[in-house]
Length: 194
Image (cartoon, rainbow, N blue to C red):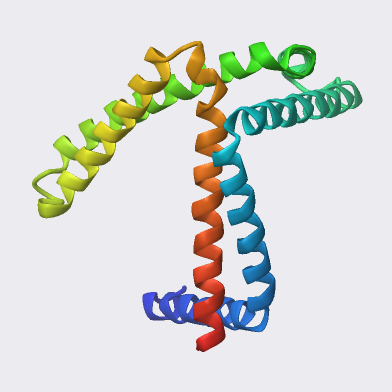
């Protein structure tokens, strides 16, 4: 039987190993961070192009995953759920073909989905904050603000349709890449100094 202190020691060993790996390869993390930050900045400067690139990328991902799903489904056709698996794979192929054939319309559809996601995420974050305001004491207000910001983003995206389809996905992907790159740069520089 594993004791709780053994589990804690295992976690400490794992953290030390990760830290040593990051320190040993800090230049690789720095390079990746710089590339992500530059791509993020570029996506924020030209969000329509980034939106188009994301849509085409998703189209290829759906198409390839659907083809792979069809192959695996037919290979294992004796397995239970064959028809559901076949339907799911065919749907992925269809979605990929539609996104690749009509990427501009795909951008609009993806923007609607992103707007709905931010709306749902905002509402659930607010409900979570209100539900836990006693347990989280001072921190619940940060969750409340995050939920309100999500709803504001959803409102800006949805109310600006179809025009917001040009910038929303590209801008959001750009922000994500920029912050992801900045965090890798920070991690790499901290590892170099340690």
